[in-house]
Length: 231
Image 1 (cartoon, rainbow, N blue to C red):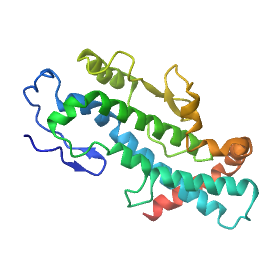
Image 2 (cartoon, helix red, strand yellow; image 1 turned 30 degrees about the vertical axis):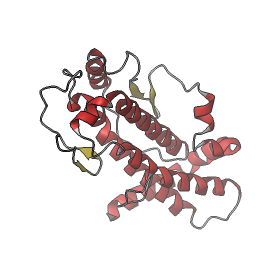
Image 3 (cartoon, rainbow, N blue to C red; image 1 turned 45 degrees about the vertical axis):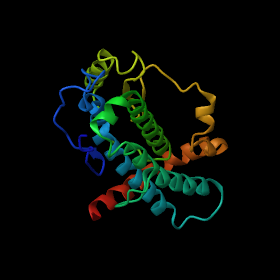
């Protein structure tokens, strides 16, 4: 039995490519983990930016009164921290989801390739939703660029060519002019996925919060920059 994949926080370490694993003779763990490795730096940087965003919102609103749209902002910061975690801690739900498959053996990675790849894409999509939510609340700068479309296409093409997943199972994502990141040419249509989203609570307050986000964007940006300089 091969040793399990070791992991440093946020990253799978590269391993030598095995010669083949039974019926999956042409699929290696590196083929399965190529998608994760493509998005790993983006996910880590996005979570860091989300933590800075939540801290900045807390700083800007610390002297504001309770109630109204200010409480919508405070709840937003709480939700962002819940998803992205806190500085120096691996306590965010998105980080935990990203590291869900650590410690698997080569055989387990190859055998569970389809499930692992879908899980990694779901986490990237969840990171993008949280990123877009943070932008709506005034955190307009400091976001990493996603992997290039050409790199994504190359990695997905390899995965589809090996028939690990059916064509179209993995989508290409692109950054918009306002720094949000979404699947190219696709929108969320599953009502249940929308209903169970941690961001739906904002509901009736989203218009007012978005407007306030534009108003407070310079202050939030300044708070983020001050926090970075203090590190």
